[in-house]
Amino acid sequence: MKTERQLRILLTNDDGIYAEGIYTLEKALSRIGEVTVVAPEAEQSAVGHAITMASPLRVKKAYRRGKFFGYAVTGTPADCVKIAIRSLLKRKPGLIVSGINHGPNTGFSVLYSGTVSGATEGAILGFPSIAVSLGSFKNQKFTYAAAVACRVAKAVFRYGLPQGTFLNVNVPDLPPSRIKGLRVTTQGKTPIIESFDKRKDPRSRTYYWLTGEVLDLEGEKKSDIDALKQGYISVTPLHYDLTDTGFIPQLKNWKLF
Amino acid sequence: MKTERQLRILLTNDDGIYAEGIYTLEKALSRIGEVTVVAPEAEQSAVGHAITMASPLRVKKAYRRGKFFGYAVTGTPADCVKIAIRSLLKRKPGLIVSGINHGPNTGFSVLYSGTVSGATEGAILGFPSIAVSLGSFKNQKFTYAAAVACRVAKAVFRYGLPQGTFLNVNVPDLPPSRIKGLRVTTQGKTPIIESFDKRKDPRSRTYYWLTGEVLDLEGEKKSDIDALKQGYISVTPLHYDLTDTGFIPQLKNWKLF
Image (cartoon, rainbow over the protein chains, first blue to last red):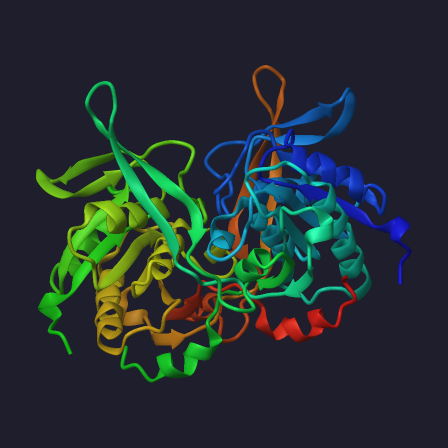
């Protein structure tokens, strides 16, 4: 086993390099490893697993509180991970962390999440990867979530992850004393409540806003949604292979050709 | 069993409503059902499963060859499916089809694909859904792929799909006589060849282009990549649940808390 000192961490997010969540997480992770931040210059929420192909990317040095903090990229979290690995980093990281997102990434939100996509890209490129989110849009208290991220990071470093598997961590937005523990969970499948608000602009033309946060009616047991609701940290192992292998035998019986 | 006449189909894509692929597919699907087109106004390639939350969506009627063709949305394929289901369509569709994409969506491309994300969104909203792609960026010969899409659509209508499962269809860009058949496949896991081309703009500032198509070194047997390479149509069942359930028991043994 390598010592923790050797742990090199690539850190990204989707709220942008100037967000509070990545700042708090950088400070915490720096205590257990050597952190390089490569993150979007601007907020990239709900970008899904997008990559920028139709336009070039630019990279700038970003400073926070007067000190060099990391590289700001004019792209998505997946772009950041790609350009970090393929171009910016001299030495490959031992771990890729994405977060801390301001708001939960549970249930179907996982599929829309830029934060999760940072970890997905890490897994595609063959690195152990973690996404970390704070389970509320309200407060900006990331200190405890950052401590949880460090704990998970150390465990990943110790135990390793199989090729293609990465972890999605959600931390309830509660005082640490009220957090009940940690659950290994599944991605929830509760329907999303949403609608479009149809409005008229000043020139009387119609436009639509997607309304309603990605709310969940009720969480299934063992799901990330339910864990958060019950006051537990959720850790869901995700995989980049979307194949529904269980359905293959049935599909082979279809008369298709 | 319902008759084919009753089949209502929502059609979207990511190459945009004026692309050749969706035009050919609309013509073909209209022979087996009642098609409504709701597609992005502009090309949306590699948007992943993005949704537009920070800005409003606009919807315009789109005409092709002087006739009403469908609704053009200033958003992504997932936006199109959401707004169609939540606002535009009076009656729910029996099937959602996304495509025909100009270029393959196999292997890791599946995760970046706007075309696939149209079908993912369909599955999230609870509808049987199919993504269809033509396996080459070169030609624009979609007629055969459209016929394959109809065949798969009819099969989905006949056999049904379990909740959460959707189909990703890739058709080789070959003369029909040279296509060997159809294979039920898995999402390939072959590494992607890519790099960033570092350049200087006229003002001597650095920028980066992602280079190399999403090429694949070699396909594993049974994968979508391999099927296409061997001249077979690939049909991969995908699922929106990314949980790596196989890894849960091991993760539960980690000392995390």
